[in-house]
Image 1 (cartoon, protein in one colour):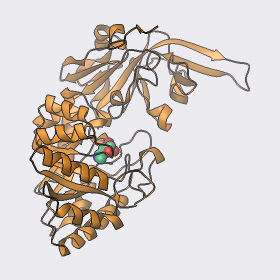
Image 2 (cartoon, helix red, strand yellow):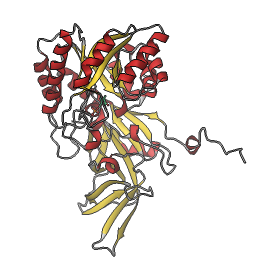
Image 3 (cartoon, rainbow, N blue to C red):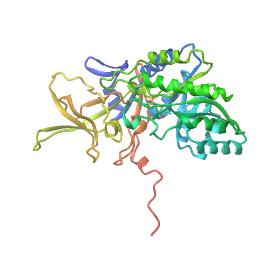
Image 4 (cartoon, rainbow, N blue to C red):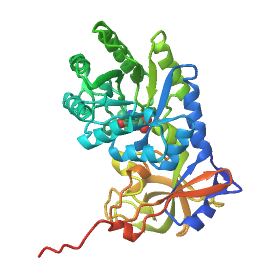
Length: 422
Ligand SMILES: *Cc1c(COP(=O)(O)O)cnc(C)c1O
């Protein structure tokens, strides 16, 4: 359910016509609906009502501070994976005691910054990281609260690039080695063990892999208890999928019910790190058609719709072959439809937003909406081909606000210098 719907043939975001935003902001731009963001957050939360839990939005999915702040005002925390994301979360007024720090490569500087901020917990991903964290915390004369991210070796049945909980993935500590690490951590003077975490992948469309992972976590917690190590937080990570095409991901409340059933009787606080499921369908990418052309001469004619957004703006189609619905902002009167590739201006054949898609016939100057682009959209964008990054806009009711200005050419060369060396 989202708030991008047609009224009198014009695609709107809540009560605002998208063409009116385009006229003021230009294209391409990302557009988010406040009502959809709120709805997704509260729907997700409702499943865990009455349970001790904390939802920490995965910042990497959509990092704009307006979005982070919106979730913070609804009680959300943040799951961060870099010093930059910590900075964003703090700028957005996320409470430090609701911040979780995940990721395999935390630098000494990043650990220091997070300790300084007083975050809730570090999800430690290797023995060496534990040693470094102990050293940094000792230097700062403070205590670091930790969980180990354990790798449960569960197949999430998703795209290989976004699977993270298999033994062959770089993430976490194998269950078999984790006990030894907890025992090491237990006697470290500046480390306090508080949790166990796991995150098995993204865009999962089934509940079973989550439950399989949770059972392994539970069995592991029982082992820890025998060693007199008490666990306060069970961090289930994120990963619930959304419908991009014809996927049928579990409803968040079904996911919550399954997790709740598994945790009955355990005195722990559940931590959740949803990303995509909160923002994916709350954002779109709006782009303008520049040209259309037909390349004949091959085995068959090939039609192209060339737009002003590209793989630098939305990488998912190129990167994962991901499907994004593409809708005309002005609903076509004549239903003439043709198969076409929707492509950007970047000098790469991998630069496409859709391949072999049945599209209404469109003319240069028309606007298209690339749906379900709220997650891993702007946050994965780059300036490849020296294309300034797109603007980000949010709508609430009948109003809209630019929450990130379109970059300009000067932004592209910020920090660069013509070399003075001969
Ligand atoms: C990416 C990530 C998430 C969020 O994943 P989604 O699939 O967007 O829900 C949560 N936790 C960790 C550790 C991650 O790396």
